[in-house]
Length: 415
Image (cartoon, rainbow, N blue to C red; front, side, top):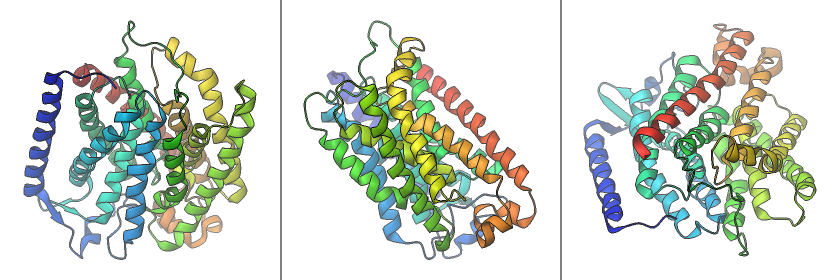
């Protein structure tokens, strides 16, 4: 991590104090606990598939999602030996602020009624999803920005994430409850654009991305294990009904397994050392989950999830071998943790897969699940073609907001 002067440390202290005081004041004025009648807050015009009422909401599921964001994502950046001492602390700092800020911003967009923001367990799950996207973004600039800049990136990232999510899920009716677009794609390209703006020719040098030194990949081991344990809960936490969960859970497991084998197929071929490294399995796990972000709740079928996961697992080794050097040398974008390979590209492919599967959104194919997964199609308001076009439009909108927002954040907030 960069060295800090006394003035820099005081700036961090002052910024943390200011942000926390402002957040407390806004909470005091606007935030209230959600009453039992909270289902009424979710109007028919909004896509509230992962903002259903707290009634019957399982605390273990919320706990799993929170642990996934805190430990799964937080520990994944710690495998870099140069940044290991401070990267976990920075991740926890980001999460501590992002959750509070996300509850407010998402609250004004989704839970605002009669001048108040009504929050419950689902509000925290939504905030955890937002935090995951911001942690992905920071992976692109880790080691090149200080904690003050990280907090400013989080401040802007939460606002832009919530805006993108609101446009896609609420206004357009896009089905992306597990975040191929809203979490993985947005988080990756927002961070990459910030990295591009912060490029300094005399400092940025193309270095080997996964600099683990000679030390064991202990953090990668722990982080990957947490991903395998909690990611199925992460992907099923936003399902509207209990009977919609098995598809998301099973598809995620199949995708994770196939992506891991795919990575191990290519890694010995592309790397001379041929040694199995935990970081490679970590990258495969992330790519496989990103692929199922949109399609997980859809009719992928078990063999389809295996195929999708296998294709996702091919991306990280190929990306680190061929795309990352081009990204650094030609596009002047240093991607510290390789978020383009493990989140960005798999997220885009996952969105395209989800769009393709949307064409099968018929009552014959989905049965009673259709009203939960594609409510507008089930109600007859849209045809399957309308839903496909909606899903397809979500990708350019996400990329536009991520790149434009990243550019403005890097230029005006972090320089």
